[in-house]
Length: 123
Image (cartoon, rainbow, N blue to C red; front, side, top):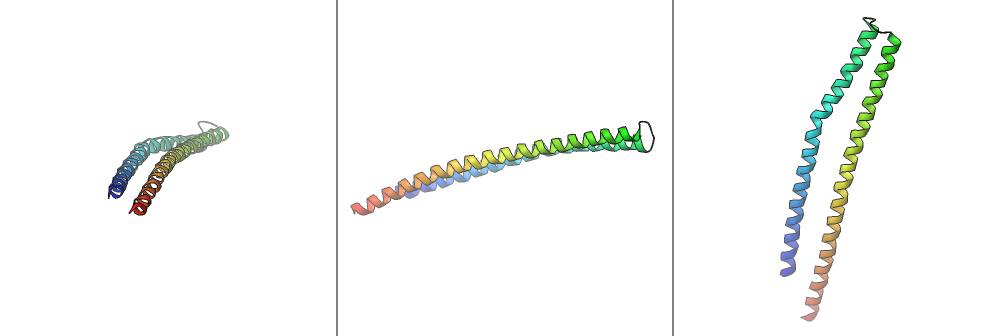
């Protein structure tokens, strides 16, 4: 009975930890969504403005407008890679911590099973 209660407590702790991690992941994803939209919108507006100024209004040479638009396009790609890498790193951290916790639980379960076998052998 003692081993079963301990196992249930471990399961409850695991469920609480899982919910806490789910909340953290939700907060990280929700906080960055508006920031990313603002940066992406700003870069797209700059690119479109450059192309309109260079192509339609001839305020700057079309070649220069295209080159600067390409530069901002590359900046946008770098931003996307950065955000992707950051998200991947966070996912790795979460998975690593979950693996560690599962490993701890596995060791405890094995210990409990061993103790139960010893109790059965005594009786």
